[in-house]
Length: 227
Image (cartoon, rainbow, N blue to C red; front, side, top):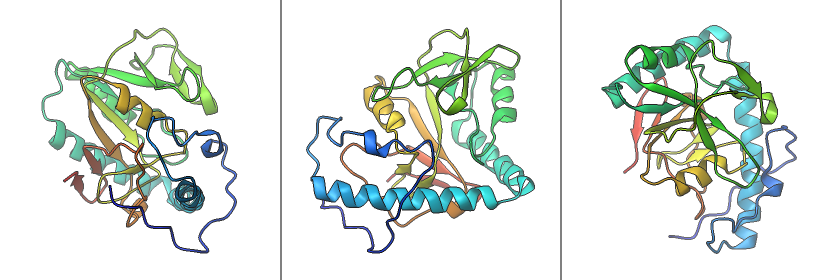
């Protein structure tokens, strides 16, 4: 892998969003060597980008987010095709993310199984539990609901929200590393799809050895496939 460029100077500043646990991540958690100074530069830049992108997302009106989400749902249908018999992991929308709960209901109606990810502990992969509308939920990390009684499942498709993304289909998340750990640990590998808004694109997230690219990134404007 080519050396990651240092992010532009002057873009790093304090970031105080509760979901950011970047300071708790061991950059060698994947077992791969990472240059400490390079990681420090990238981490500062990512914190600044999260702040900027989340603020821009929250500034969008609810109507615009709804309309964009409908376009993303149409792209999901076109990309995935037949859903019957497949297990699809989605997510509970948080801080202006695309709200795909209506699309989730269409998965059930078409004979698929829906699941939600569960954070069982920090620095560990996610687990997945089946869920459908009306079944009980409990509050988890960051007060995000997860299935109270759902059965453990292994997803065929994992749909992950992005804070930011680049054309290499690398996803910038909240900094906890949960999806990267999870995708690296699952076998067989699920189809990993990132979803977000076109305005969240950045020229590069400066991917490191532990970053796992998505199979595709879907926005209201296009479907970007990993090369």
